Image (tube, rainbow, N blue to C red; front, side, top):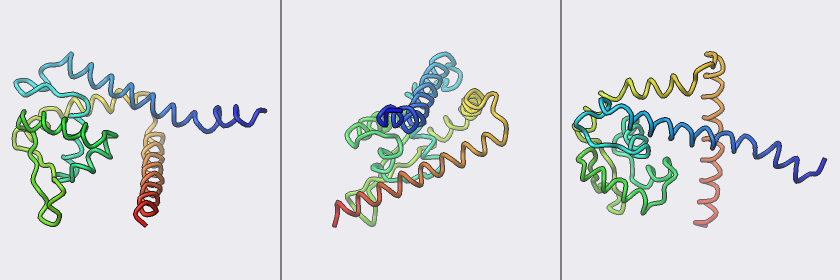
Length: 166
């Protein structure tokens, strides 16, 4: 078998499947947000990326802005625009780090915390849709594999950054 074809068929397929799943999850999130105004009620309309930002802030309130950009796959100017809009909507605020004034940490406002509480069933529905027809063992295996992928990718990012700064 042609080596180039083998690489395409064997090595890239998992990446493409993961990317397609991620794209479809974003599409489902957008459709659910648009079709169910009760989720956000009188709160501002949110984009899928804004929802991702909120979810990450629930896990780590006060995360640095550049880290949010990395997590969401946005460049720094793009993340700045997203956070500017979220700040105007009064769902986040930014505060300069005491340790490093170049760093802005991002925090949830009480308004955002109320939104997130109201949206918990929405997040549960997304998970139910995404993992429909998966056994508990498959879900555990998937989560474990995602952790390994993140660890491997983060290790490589750290290596590249270290070499770049040397």
